[in-house]
Length: 221
Image 1 (cartoon, helix red, strand yellow):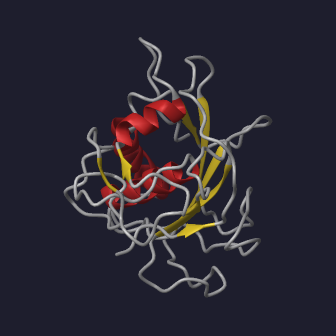
Image 2: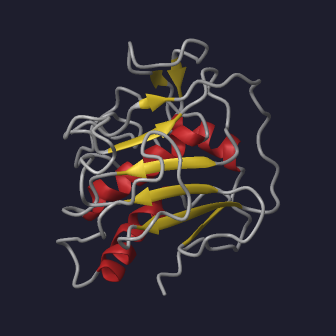
């Protein structure tokens, strides 16, 4: 199952490591059958069918199970996940569905599990919309799609490691953002991006370290 497709080419310079301070915000929207609160290519304004899941008693319960993986993988980074759309300021959005890609204008084959823009020099876009298409059957696989698509928004590429969140296939072996330098996937990388990547170190650079004593977790109310 392919996890992500690289899309939307932008040009800018590489930023320095994010300073500790206000956390970056991630808005997770589980489709409710209405128009998405944030939209962007490739799906535009097309409303996805309501989110449904097989690994919990309700969508809210499934969201909590998915978040347990995200909380673990993003624990060291200065980031806040929220189910409420921020009223102002920059934030990243992940639209989460269980309906596959059919509702999205037929732009992707059925096996695609997620999509997000990535800059052609792998900079942090600072905001943007990513899509997780296949989040209904397995909590860890869903979390892997969300985590990877969000990471694309901040400039991470696919890697060849089966244990890395940035692996292009949502494998059971995934354990988080891997802290070692490794080759990116050949043929799928933007032209101006590095050919190797330490996923953990790059995420730490883009989000900044989580302040000591702070816990970052979602409110699924």
